[in-house]
Image (cartoon, rainbow, N blue to C red; front, top):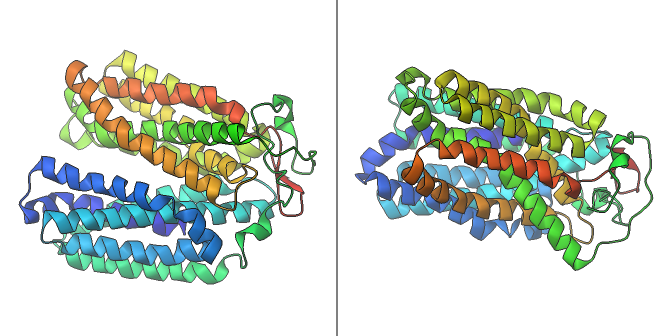
Length: 404
């Protein structure tokens, strides 16, 4: 599921220059069309919880990838700005739903696994993104028409996600949740000493939080999730410009993204064991420190080597923050299956929609180095948001603790 999701959109990105030329639009118009991807996510994303309740997370995640593939095909076949923008909105909206569903199902698996495993799934997504971008670049280099390439991507997504569906957990998602809502041990008032509780321990049930506390948890986790994406946005949107200004050769301007994503893949592969050993609170607080140190080092160095080293350090810090935030969101008591994930994911998307234009405004006024301050802010938010996480293990439907 996660591999397919990573493969999808990343295949289209390397074809953007050709699409811009085929449509005969300006870069400004192209940027406005790409923004529809985020708009589609905001509009459709809130439907994820209802769809999961109605059809289960497994079906929504797997079948949704074929629906997403249709949007990619439409974008590749678009003959006007409007069609292209609407297809990107389709892709963004479907991706928002699939993102919540695949994480909801991954967390079902984690509850049965007996320990943290969700970050390994996100490592598969990162691997899929790298493979998809590589495949897309190869198709572009070989001169394969965009529409044929996207048709092949649609078939690939349908085959991979369709093959995964029979192996998924059957039945409603509520079957793997604690009816007593005792899984959210990570409310702000819980003692930090509980972090080191092992997988075999059982914590006492906690009372359902007030509506105000539930709102606070959703907001803080949404901020945490968005803050974890700030370093990724720095490398995806700004690092090539920054490295160019610092004198990097044309073949090195993309190394900021490569440096961070490579570290994130490694961090996500190792993250589950680290979370089980240290607890989510310590991992997020430590990750915030690493992001702040990495971005701060890049800011102070002001050179190509310093920037690349900073991206490596930052990637290690933000690698597991998104899956940790999703896991905590899925355990907010009093919310139906998928609702916590839906709200936190939607809020993070809102923040990620408004943040880049603000960074761009400051960058125009003061210089591209401002983007590193943006990434540094993400580290600070991570460092401050750990109290919203559990201090003890997760619980499954039987009320048994399964992970620290």
